[in-house]
Length: 596
Image (cartoon, rainbow, N blue to C red):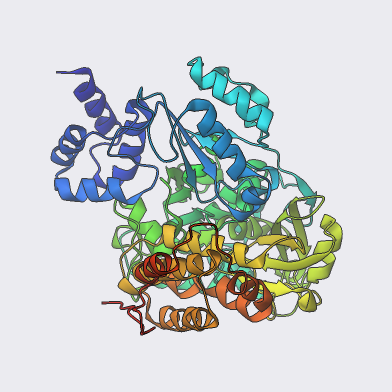
């Protein structure tokens, strides 16, 4: 038996030959082997009783999995717009030149490959990159890039690289109720146990807590539906897959307030009757895994997890961590559950909803990191206290991840109802022309709207707060977001798979100077089509930044449309033919786009 087969068998035994752990098995196999050879996938499929097509399908779905050899050093630059604004593209080209490697390709000696990833969740301390999907290098500079290239050429183990390179600061600029003084472990749980499951459920309802992950669904209602659903088991899942570019608040909560998050999950388990919890940690946050496992083990030793929690017979609950493998769509709760079950992260058709049929077909409540943290504080201080913060319909506080053109990027926590302008003042933003609230799938606000307020009644936010001053081209911002959605589409439904690509091609045509006002109208038409025809929310919101930027920053588009210029030797007919092929238009201007 070869060493490789022995390693695979040991890995399968670790996960008890559970096919639902396929993503974790593949992740750990690749971590040790570097990539996923077909013979290894064949062995895994046979051992788990799965088809090879299923295993290869999963391996091909996640962008952090490789079924072809890649460099021993796999460098992924964050390609978020704020990293680009800080010079990431120039530094990526610099590294490729120093290492004599083509972008997206493995060097001939197998030493290194350099590519991009959507966002590393380090927008407040970028530009940043990932090495082998597990090691962070933040605050990149040309000098640091030169040093990094030398270390790679010298085959220096990553563990011996300068430790300050991988330093990730919380950068909490303004703390309120969730980021302030932290309760002692078990304190909120004891209060919840005193109230009992129904009493705690009523407390969450009276607090009017709404989910902090994006949709804003009433937490108490979700828990009651899950509690009342029939099933042999109930599950509590924490969605820590904040892949929205510009969002990094969950990273800070998991780093600074892990006890509060895990305590909130345990309180949820008390209410819904769950014995098992799962936290889905985005692959880019692998560096937090050791810290989180340490906190979980400490809580077990303190009697806060495991059997008979805090001495209450029958109250048994524990939490396991599942690490993602790079898929933005897994932030959608049903896609996340599919990934937890060892499948491709394709969103499910709903109904049934997860509260009725979620993980393993059982009732499952999925809540965001910040939501669970809020639950802990509500249990400790009570519903009236929480409801007295914020507005009547948006109670409590909201954490914002601020990045872009400002003097003090980082984490800011405010009561709901806070003005956009107040946040800009506090972070040191000057001459601001736009703010992207909630990430690319959120809303883009112009300077005329800075008097609006963060709340479910006005400006809804999942947490990202990206600032752009008047030196920025808002067309370029929207183009970056369009490329992000095209890259992250799971490909399941044709309107999203094809529509996002058509948007990118149309915007590329405008960017290259071949566009017209007709192209802008076509972008509007694509937005309307995708908004009503896609399988999940990714495609429905993919054109949000496009729609907002066209409506509020039309001159940015007109500048590109009217900036046509020709270099010596330019062949107009050849270039237009190429543009028509790329954008799907014939010589007469008739639309050739089709979604079938």
